Length: 127
Length: 262
Image 1: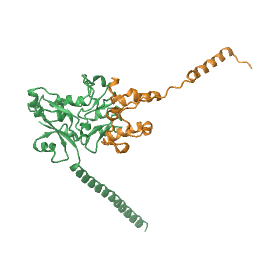
Image 2: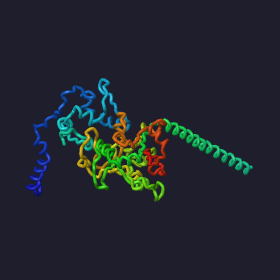
Image 3: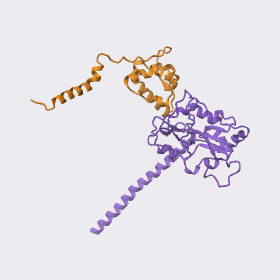
Image 4: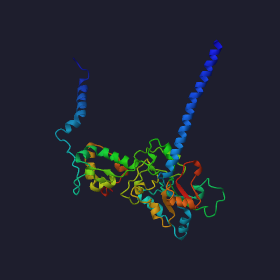
């Protein structure tokens, strides 16, 4: 069997394979470090359990938005029947005083850019 | 024989059609009557926030010293940007001349004290708001609890139908990121973003805490009165009983809930 222009095709194929596998080969062994969001020191409990907040904070925020804006209901009953003002800016960020050290940690790791902060004002550190 | 049966067939057929359509017509009338009763009953007790603006008090006060307290307070707590360009400006609470605010009111010889005088303008929180009707995403809606015409900025897609629909110019579009134009941020309230429409929210966030709107609270001339239009004993209704009041473009049928004493 003879490949015409083998001297061009085979190096070309090798370069192609090399280019496509480069990101994987380059990152072999070194996994990106897991995010470490900084938890508030003063408060021990959030509005819901840690597991719930980890998995469902985005859904909770969505529900809060609809509850406040559309149903005019500004009371949220959280863990152990404690009542909260359902507000990202005024309730969440009161304990989680740093967006950079808390929100951004996981969001950057996961490569998501929620547009909350287009309107809601992040704590002073970012201004 | 043949003719007779056709004749009777047509008779019976005609009567049946008449009878069946009669039932439908009856249903329609019965339904409208009931709905009318309900609406009237609802209007009597329902909560509908409204405002009475006594422009005379405002002007009298202004003669002593110029005052923009209401606008400063409103725009301050709601993070309303200050943009000079009238094509890009954002207005929640603003003033305009009598002939612009009430173009259909009266004739070309208005009373001297109204002519050329600034009137305080804001969203009328209409009973029949055209902005709500045209909004394709229901980002603007009339809150059934208290009649405030609210905006859900999360849903606004910036189509500006509402701006075309609103006959009062109460809505402003964010052509650019408003943040650089806000002198001092109120950290308790969000800003808006590029590409959404905004307007007065009757201080929904203050009403939730049983506070009056900021403009009403700060007015030193006590020119602004806020209350429930559905309650015959409310201060708003008292004022409406005592004074002759006008509303902006009443004839459009939007049912504005901001009244002016002139």
